[in-house]
Image 1: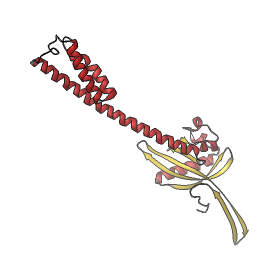
Image 2: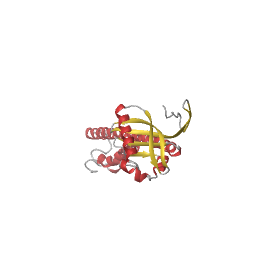
Image 3: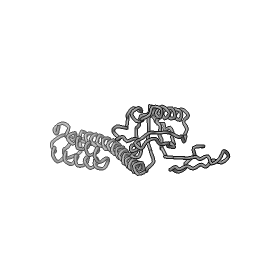
Image 4: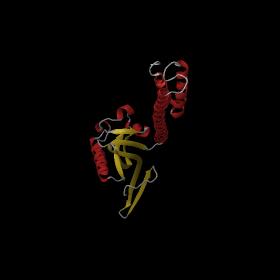
Length: 232
């Protein structure tokens, strides 16, 4: 294109510079392209020496087009930087949350509206005796050894999601260590894709001894920020 449109020869380089570096690299490529055009194609009517009406129009059009390319490239470059920053921040937050959930002995899990696990920390998987690739996304029937426990848990989940409130409930679950009773703090979490159920399960145990018809001895053990009694 040198003899007909000499400046267009360097448009690809300017677009590449704008995409990779934004405004200033694109402007630098514009100036270098102009200088190279004048040096390489001195005999053309757009790039020769001396000022004529046709050359002035060609120069104005060249710098106008290159300026538009540079401005658009700067906008795209800034958008990519913002997106990259958000992705890096999300990765840092995810790493922090992963470290917290992996390190806690409490059971932390996320379920969808069908009762399928979407996330389970190592403590949860340890109680279930299942690997992550087996438990995540599995049908609820595969997560319970007792149909009664499964039905009761799913009914509780549906009730809490319908009420859109946080609740602390007692749940029985038969895992690899046998039957245990847990205090589960459950709360619905809603986003653009719908509602999912979030829960953190805390172990609790209690015993009551009837010393006499008028005197009962009661003791309980639990782990968590607050451990309600069975009466609560």
